[in-house]
Length: 273
Image (cartoon, rainbow, N blue to C red; front, side):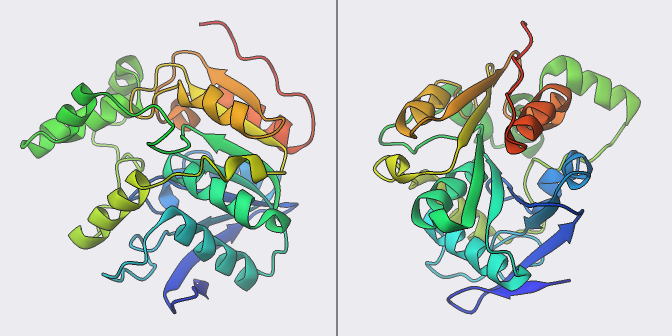
């Protein structure tokens, strides 16, 4: 397993699959590279895909130090690209991965070819935050109830019912790395909550596609037009009826749109709900 050395000496684990132009896939908060397992093969068929474990997750180091921030995660990504011998890559970041991708594109424009920002936001000061009912659901004392609330923020109830019937006990890779220590979870949460790339967004020069599920309450869909308006010449692709994990449940809609954009073609129109 390859490891890159970050600026502070932390080891960042990553994996490479596929052939073609490089494509970096960035996972959400408190998640490792398995976040992308459901769709990675679709991208690896066309691109050399790179996935990584953010510090604090997976096989990467988990320092209990003040080194967790979205700009800092972006610097970890640069270390991975350097170690993998990749000068420039397409970048697709979702959720907190999209926040990291914003800094990567703004601060390291020579490393980013095309940029896709999925189910993400510019940060609390200028973005649209999740509602108090969402926060209350996720902070329930009963861990099973909190897990169920998170599942229903990620996926539609109908799709969940289908999965639970067809694959009883299946593992969902979007609910967080279960091996993370408590200090790393706290630091991931703080890093994402402190994200504010508003002033940096106009510096992004990479062609950008903003993707969001219309029914996303975890990271409200109202953030998509904010990002698109702030990033020069950005385009928006909304997935009707999708919640936060649109890239998995609605892969048949979202993945072709992202692939078309990365190939430099026209993004197909999203289907009507």
